[in-house]
Length: 205
Image (cartoon, rainbow, N blue to C red):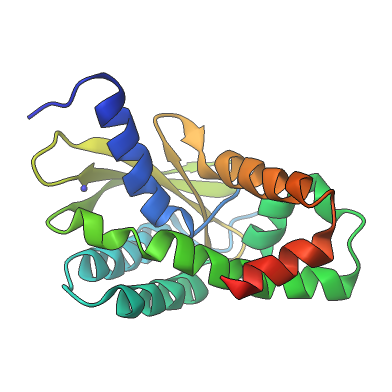
């Protein structure tokens, strides 16, 4: 993971990153706690993540198989509870524990279906880890994303130093959490703030 012009390159990059976004969405971690993992461990984690993503992208499998594998990567490497509730954002403050649990489960399936189905579009592309640096209580792992026939661009994977889980990604300075939070917020607005209805709809696929 030849030059594209204007909106075309922007849309292609957004689409590809959308295919990865389900693996983690969080803007930033609070700072000062001692790291539980090292920079090397964070980079090792992302090497495993991108190896699995590269494998999915170029597997040639069916869409349903790709979605299943994608959900497996999400569950294995990401802090799923944290990601889902971060995507829910302020709307989750008044949610009951039962609603939060149901939302997390529904969100996981939603993310897998929504983004896992995009991988077929990017066969021949790949992601390569370049470097890692610590920023407060998180690690930023810089990767080079290459789409077949297009110039490479940077994607930064964020790893929490507290639990060693993948929690976010940034492309061209924009955190994926913001996009997901806006999307979930818009979905709630269309349902007049009814979280139970949103959960039910996410479960349907």
